[in-house]
Amino acid sequence: RTATQLVRSTQTIMADFVDKQFSKDEVADKVLEQYDDETTRVFYQCVMGGGGHDIHFGIYKSPTDGVKESSDYTTEWMMTQMEWAKPIDPNCHVLDLGSGHGGGSHAMAKRWGCKVTGYNLGPGQNALNMARCVELGIDHLVEARVGNINDPLPAEWTGKFDAVWSCEVLCHAGDKVALFKELSRCLKPGGVFVFSDIMGADGADEKALKAFTDRNATTFMGRPSMYVDFIKESGFKYVTWWDGSHHLERYFRGMLHQIATNRKEMNAKGVSDEYLNNWVTSLTDRADVQKAKGVFAWGVFVARKPEVGELI
Image (cartoon, rainbow, N blue to C red; front, top):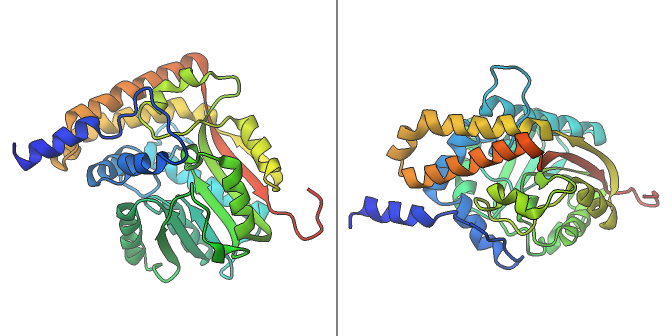
């Protein structure tokens, strides 16, 4: 077979997790399969990022917004929530947990002039992140390290960071409370933890989330009430949860539009029709079930590590 045929044969099974969820020890390899192959990076940057580096769900402000605009608004909103919980300035150091293509890291470094350390499983994504940092002139502020969120964080990070940022990564964490405790260890007293995640709605059966879990390397999907409990159980002070679930159906349909309008370009870069068709089926199912039953939840959580002597 030709090299192109071999690539497309590989893509037939790439990121295909039908009827599967993974243990804490298994999920890292599956996350690499989902996100860090060259062709899957093309897919995510086009279909979720709209050509940008913010690869996550979005907030819509106007009828003409697409996935790129809405993803950018999510980044802005998360930064605003972080800044309300703790002022961030050039003397601060932020950990971007699961930094992906680096959109959050870039935005924080540009807005505040702070140092940002990305911690991310995919070396290919990290290279893309840092190349963009050079283009933006912020490579002196941002670094991207390879690391697995399901392993203990580096011991030398104890008390190192002023803030932790994480955007739609925690669905890949096998033991969320253990990870939160690690993040608390790495924060200075008074440090802030801001994160978003895709979840099941409270009361949703895991089987109802199949349209998502069949295409994403998950352990188990959290629920909003679970995350509030996890925050408190791990020693953080709960600040707020902002519910953006009502934006999800539109975003799923926006991803479908991105596939329809950019299919030929993605094909030319090695993304097969079979891979894209699997996504069309999954996203259509997601959008329809969200409209009918509202089984998915998404939004932003804010927590703080207590100051010394502060009551939780």
